[in-house]
Image 1 (cartoon, rainbow, N blue to C red):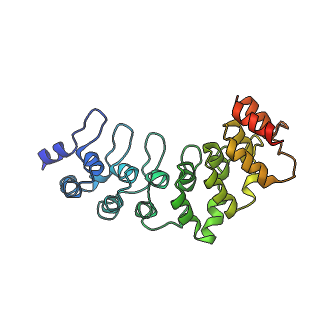
Image 2 (cartoon, rainbow, N blue to C red):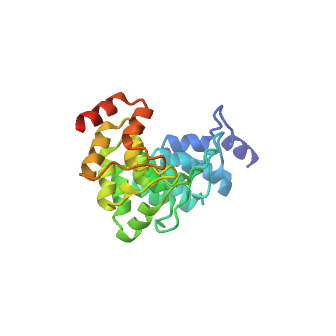
Image 3 (cartoon, rainbow, N blue to C red):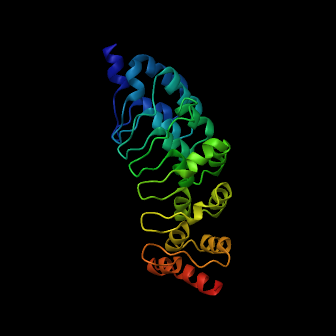
Length: 246
């Protein structure tokens, strides 16, 4: 048994064990044999980035592997990697709703974990432009209001984060779910429109302007409009687009 355990816990230069490799290869039979050899501790073994096999199961959107690790091997979402990120965050960013449910053991209604910046798995889904999963998470209207109300440590809501990424369709989806998100401000008094301008997301800036209609551009805590942000960010094409729009 000792020899089996030593072989199963061997590591490569990245700290990956045979368990991590089996998950990434989507090799369930090998994974089952390794878990059998290692016992309950196998599911919670870490690599050099402090990631467990469950982290990689969700990064590769391996729903059935995630179920095996959580239901049969006792892996939990409580583990965090060296970036303080849980498996649920990665599942939300690049996985399916079935994988996210597997990680949370179908307890979607539980309080969402936050990363080191105070961001929830829902926020990660927004940042990852995982539109299908965002739609499914918002399909529960009672739960949707809670998801949309969350803010990170910088007081940014999900629309701020979508604006930083420049995803027009994601922003449209979020505003359709809550039409006050676009006027909420972060710790600097900036709206999502400010952040979109600063990042040079011209199409999105023009869309925000269209949504605003004839209202004056929003001001941040230093009385700066989104146009200031475009100038400060050196976003020539966005500056040009905003000048031509006016």
